[in-house]
Length: 316
Ligand code: 8YV
Image 1 (cartoon, rainbow, N blue to C red):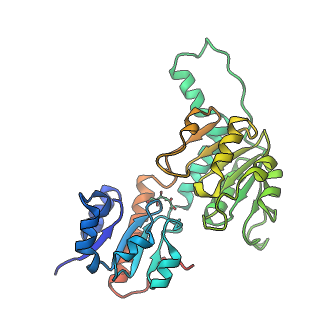
Image 2 (image 1 turned 60 degrees about the horizontal axis):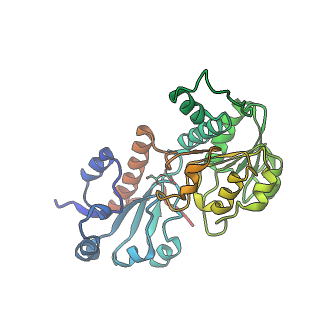
Image 3 (image 1 turned 60 degrees about the vertical axis):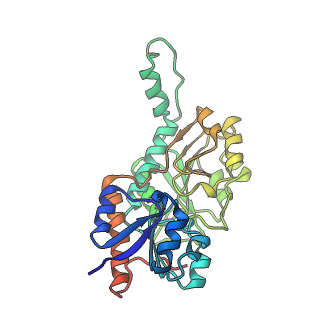
């Protein structure tokens, strides 16, 4: 029997692609010599689209797929998908909640430790042969400090569990306060107050049009010159030019960032800063987690093809 064709926006890992190819005939848009020609030829037949958190799916792309019924996102964040347009067309969206939670929280904790204790900077110091020749300043301490978590969803909760093990005092802000029998950490009803009462502020919230650039001067002023910021959510949540200014002027102490505006062509000024630790959007990027994510994305597509209930449909 001929396999159903699906359009893959940007390729997944080789092993994930091989797994998908057992069930579907794959067309990879980003690898097409002429993407427009590919869309013209296969677009009218495509019912299913596979994408990831970064590539998403624009209204324009959906427009070239008149029979599109499902978008499977290999990631939990669906902010790069035009959800309003998908809803208007009745196109269903699935994502990969749950399977990447602890991985992303691990990256967050790693970034926090690396940023505050300046681990990459000290690694460079050893490699460059300066040890024993150049005096080194001390760094701030991590344990025993106050951690503010912005966004107490799955990742926020997983981060909090790790933070407690590091003897951090946890507080949070979330769109809705979570009942105390579920989440007992101190709650602040806005990000500014949370930042004011935090030594470290970590962003774990999902991105949407309402929180775009919402971490700006007021929050960073409240965090202050001894405060550190970690972002493992989406770059869009931060007012990035303001953050760069605050880092340059040491109006906050430092930042550990996995996500940015304009990935991968990020603002080059980040490279000049000595108080940041930068990651190329790798929080979920382990062999094990990416395999689990791809399996969930594939299982959603298989459920769709079989007319069964979807495993993890994203409901707006
Ligand atoms: C991935 C992500 O970078 O889950 C998300 O929202 O941003 C990431 O896990 C991406 O979607 C990889 O496919």
